[in-house]
Figure 1 (cartoon, one colour):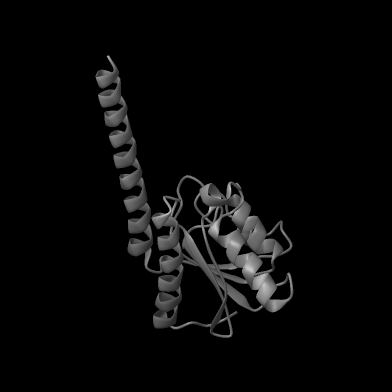
Figure 2 (spheres, rainbow, N blue to C red):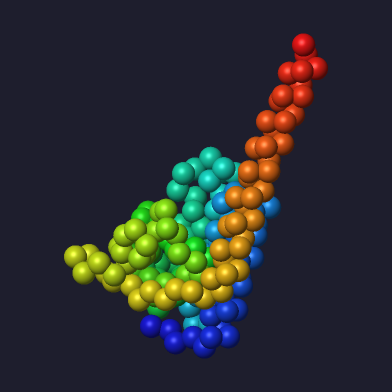
Length: 172
């Protein structure tokens, strides 16, 4: 297990936040992820479900795929995954299957969390691989980008509704 200083954890979570920003700019749910081995980022990812029209294109899945390619191995035994929001059930399963030993996430995911909030897949003793989990790194920043996304989404919907009404009135 890698032993990161608080400064290193903040640095890598900031890198994950940069990935989340990419999603936000594409009007995707802004979750970002980086995978670190030996102090170097070996995989990056951000949500791209809408962009790629693929339900599984979560940040963690993209980062795991890139890290697998970088390492030339499906096992990421000496890596740490940093993600802005608690992994969902699918991503928690993928983390276990990739044999990643350590996950550090920013903010909890009360509606879909698979690493402590709703389910605790990463530390479930019934599974053959358990993961060390740390939470709360830059939690406020990680939650804030999500809040920004949902506020912007509500504003876009409100504006679309207003324009539809205006167009309807013009047509009559």
